[in-house]
Every structure is written in structure tokens, then in C-alpha cells.
Image (cartoon, rainbow, N blue to C red; front, top):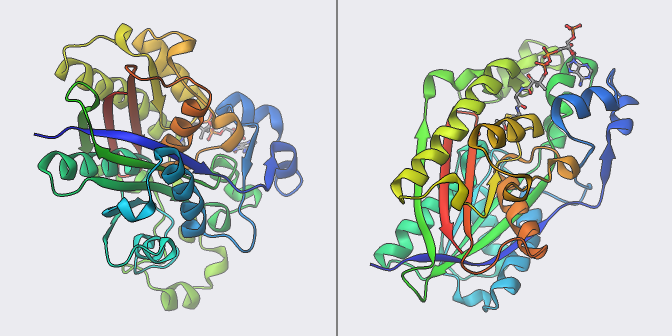
Length: 333
Ligand code: ACO
């Protein structure tokens, strides 16, 4: 069986920086509260001419360049997002068109914060079976347009930011290097603890308008913060542990853990619980906020650029988020 390896990483974030200070001018919040509870100092919000798919395009171009391949070598696209350009079709097809990739297949993944790891797992299976040789896996999110930026929404809106990350997943030249295993979980009973209900097929736009939708909290993301926190700090270590056990490895073997950038407090809690050193965990939520499906590929691309991901390193990716869904991947780089 083939093994799949990440041969290129790229990311794109809008140049529009929104600091905690900026937020405190439009809602009742402050820098101290946000930093103490989340670790976030600033995030990016897209410019008017940008979108989920346009950010994905830039991240993809960077990943293709990093892999050193021609874009024509890509034979499949997997696009993870919770903020698609349109209700339908998903943005995978837009990206396929923008890249000029003839008629190759494009799949959209709806697994929120775990979306990139789920997408990577799918790519891994396709490469292993020999169906494809080079797959573009993307996570891109445009949150800023859909947040309640008044004081009512401050518990959620200060956390999320916009951005995109992309990976080229290819057939590995060696059986020793590549994705060792992926582990996927879901618990739908908690779907409404972290959700955006409307507009949806359960609540179409006319219904929202009829009910004077402008004051309707269901048109904004809802998060039961404490409940999410408790589950996240349990599921992250579990799913990382599952990956280590599967491969007869221990937490001391991990060269770099890239957790989904949910909240710095969550990452620090996981780090402590797993007994990992500061050098073993990569965080960049301070700069970008939580970019859900884009957070892991942005962080992985940055870590690689910074020389923190080297050939032979054991890299662990782990995510938890809305669904609930959670997932991990262990990679011998
Ligand atoms: N600025 C100032 N005050 C605020 C803000 C804000 N942005 N948001 C809420 N507050 C206030 C609340 O109104 C409340 O005031 P009150 O005591 O007068 O009623 C007070 O701060 C405490 O609010 P809580 O919601 O209880 O704050 P908590 O300590 O639980 O922190 C947080 C909220 C940061 C969301 C926390 O629950 C948490 O870390 N949750 C984990 C979930 C998470 O980070 N998810 C990330 C996205 S999901 C994912 O990616 C998995």
C-alpha cells in the first residue's frame, strides 16, 4: 500500500489586523479580558474584495509553490470550511475553477474545527489506495462578516478570525515517512452547544425576516463556552493518546504538536495534561484568533516556514470543535 506525505504547505491571512483595542471601540470588551481568557491579541478580518475561496486560492498557490509541483499535477481537491461562499455549491468547485484545474473532482468537508484533519484523513485514504497522487487539502474561513459585533455577541465574536491554509498531500517516496494514522470522532448529541442555526433548511430566510430577524440571536454563532471548554480539554488528550497508542509511541516522541487554535487556555491545558514542553507545542492564536478549519494548516505552514518541522520529525495534529467533532493525525515528516 502507498503511504501519503505532505509535500507542501501554504497559508494566507488578510492584511487587515483587528486588535483587541479595536474591538473595545465597537463593543464592551477589553484587551485584558480577551488575553486572559483566550490568549488572543489580534485577528485578521477580510477586506471587501476577499472571500473564503479567494483566501483559499492564495493559500493553495503558496502550498503548490512550496511542494515544487505544477498545479496540473493536482488530481483532487478537498475543501474544509464552515463558512462557504454560497449555501450551495461548496467552495471546492470555485477553487477548482480559479486554479484552472480542468475537471478534477472537488469535495467539500463540513466538520468545523476538525475539518482539516478530517480532510487530511480522506486524502490519506485516497493516496493509500492509489486512486490519486497529489491532493490539495484546504481549510479556509471567513468569520468576521457573520459575527455579532455588538456587546451581546462579545463572548463569541472576540475569538474568531479569518484566514486560509493549504497542504499538498502526495504519494510518499518512502514507507517510513508520511501520515502514520488518523483518528476521527463525533458526538452529535452536542451539536447545538456550538452552532449557527440560521439561515438553514430548518429556518429559511423568509421565516427569519417574518420574525424581524435583526434581533434574532440564532442568525449568529452560539457557543456554550464552559461546556465546550470542558469537552475540549478531555477530547484533545484522548485523541492524541489514541494516535500514540496506535503507533506504539509516547508523548515524549512528539517533536511538534499542532493543536487546533481554539483558545490558548485550551492548548496550555492540553500541553500540561500531556506533559509536553513549550518547544513541543506550536501556537499562533495570539496573532490570528480562532480560524476553525484553517487554524491547523495556517499553524503548520508557519511552523514549517520557521524551521520547526523537519524531515523525520514526528508531528501530531489534533482538533476539537463544533459537532462535536474531534480528530488527530500523526505524521512522520
Ligand atoms: N469581554 C468582556 N467581558 C466578556 C466578554 C468579552 N469579550 N465576553 C463575555 N464577557 C463577560 C460575560 O458577560 C460575563 O459577565 P458577567 O459575569 O457579568 O455575566 C463574564 O465575562 C464571564 O463570562 P463567561 O462566558 O462565563 O466567561 P468564561 O470565563 O467562561 O470565558 C470563554 C468565556 C473564553 C469563551 C470560555 O468559556 C472558554 O474558554 N471556552 C472555551 C470555548 C472556546 O474557546 N471555544 C473556542 C471556539 S470553539 C472551538 O474552536 C473548539
